[in-house]
Image 1: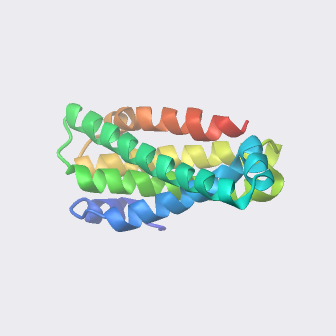
Image 2: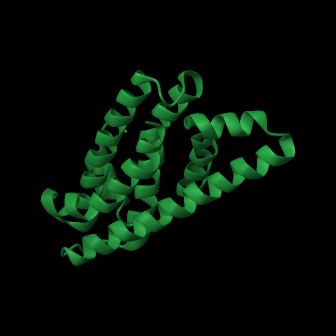
Length: 167
């Protein structure tokens, strides 16, 4: 946690599907409550309506993170990277979910439109950008400008779909 570069270098040979899928799914369950309108819809709905809504969001976030990880890996390979796709996808799913978790948890209580939540969203997005770039750099043996380029689509998608959805 406090030494991401050696961790990413060590984990470049390991697929981590179970933790990545589980953490991303749990994040997706909570992410519903980070959006003001979605939270109101879920809280005002009956239990039989709210449960499928929350579960569907969890599955959708998990699938979206998986696809974004594949795109990041494909771009890294196009830029000359040599890493395997399973660690890249799994780590990118974990990075996306874990870095945004503080914003979602604070948004549960303050609402997504709160200025502190918005500031926290930008800070966690920058942290996700730094970690994704470092992960792609270490797992694909790329210099950081190419690693940032490979991570760019995922970062823009995170910004537009998840972060800006609360502003």
